[in-house]
Length: 373
Image (cartoon, rainbow, N blue to C red; front, side, top):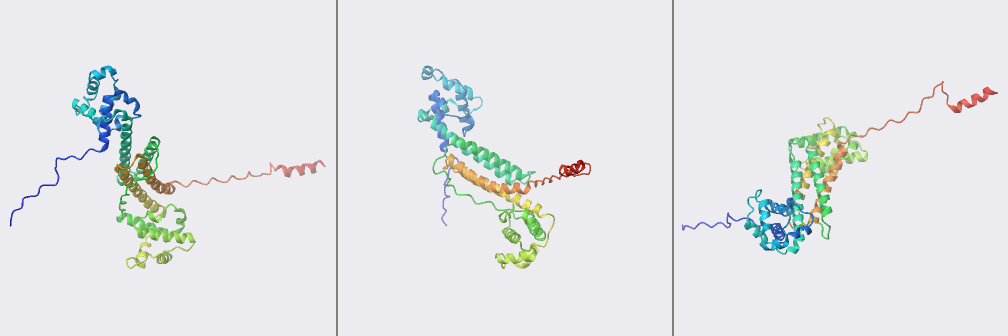
């Protein structure tokens, strides 16, 4: 057989991905400020932390920290560049005189410096939202935390505060909904512990149905196993109608709701409802906690997808993030309802006791009148 030469790879391993548009916006702004330092007064609120590259942030920090030279001197001698290099060079070794000249070559139009600064603020907002989304995902997926639900909700609060702040900085405009496809929700945990606790909840609620009216904060969608959610819906339907609740009535309701199939028969359902233990409220909290963390994970992934999509404007990102957080808030409200202690009913005030030594005034008046006769 003839020997075929090996195919050349379709890619160069030394290739680097192209820089995103924000790289050129940062270069254009810095170049404009190197050429015309007075432009910094018109670019609006901007800090070194807004830049995507530490090198650019260091140059900008020097620009705002130093006093620009006299315009006549600036035209004749490169004192401005020398000052910036001496100020930022010790902390950023990559900054060289040649790169400062590269920035000047990329200056674009210095009169557009304010627009370039707006681009930098917008991309910083996108990156900030992404970082907060990652923190929310981490909290929702870290089982080693002492209280994952509390940490996840704290991360959601921080993300909400960021979005509120960004909403005050970026004005709304038409077409504010992101067009980014939502990622697939993460798979639910259906391990042995989860499955067992959901079945114990169903058994306990069936054996002690008086707990169902106090557990309106739990929904069928909270269950990791869809079959368990369907059986819980049977329980709540019976309780809502005021019908008797036991294993047989739940089985009958399951038949009417189309739950029984060749894969799930009557004996399977009866076995699921045969192991009550402890408090239904306790097991319900366990189910809802997992549902809350799953919702936080899903919300974080969705917001992360919005932030990764550079086609989204800041307001589209803000609107999409708020909608995603609203879905988490709906579960959060039910979680607080489940975990908040029931307020004690204040005792009714007792009427003051009437003694023989202090008769009531209406009764004493006639007696006094009779004595005076």
